[in-house]
Length: 400
Image (cartoon, rainbow, N blue to C red; front, side):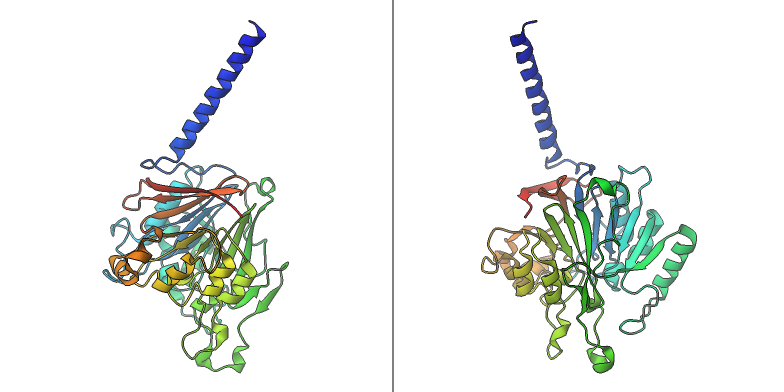
């Protein structure tokens, strides 16, 4: 065979291989098909739609998994969202089914880390049911082991759950410690992905400064302020930042940005948190998108390309929150806003123009970050059944 013929054959082979790769890539992004499985080197962030509260599943580049919140609590329709996909199972059961499906690549699927941002039912109410259907190896919260800040907490059912899991299932329980970068880590192949890191930003008013592991106390000494001014549960929320290469992601529970009328300024916790976090590619709106969070300062500081709204009732997201996250006056460039569910009352409350600014108003939201963290896409999955069919694909986006 001549050299020319061999070259032609080699070129044809390469073209055929490239064509096959392109076909696979297109198929992987096809609307109407199930979401392709996680692959090693990829970071997945799933905001799970249940209609009943917050829940997000993260799959780290080496396969380590983390569940942030598992809510089961919501106002009744029409003010609140209906259960998704339906009411035949609890929210915790649906979350566990979702997690097992997305972790199907693991022969022994489990939640490596479960993080409770704060002790409200729409963030923690489903963990008991989750643990019945998929093991949880380490639980992280803001109070372990005494649960006495800012006042003793009535968490008898949760404490009993922890004790049962520790004694019978070997669960570890830890208090999240702000400033640390080594509490939530890659469990399987950490050496392969040195650019991946989880930063503990805030807990109980202790906030990372953004420098090394140093923190500052944002809340005053409780002995020096009236009891009625003590921090609320929302103000004590945990916050984390996930970094992978150039990609950054933030989530912070129900942390408020402004205090209630007449209360001290320090009760607006978002400001020091935003200073520590800085610009990110994707961020979760504070407090489901209610008007007391996601302030102008917070938006201007984070400058997210993608905003995720864990909405569940008629006031989520608020009209002025939509204005802030979409305002070109606060920072340059386009941005997309994705909500897990928007009830009809919200559409009326925010108006058709604001509603039209939402890139998605119903479905699971999956941020899939490519290996190395240079680019990512957003997939919207049908939440009316557990087949996880892709409804829409957004991107690719270039990480900052």
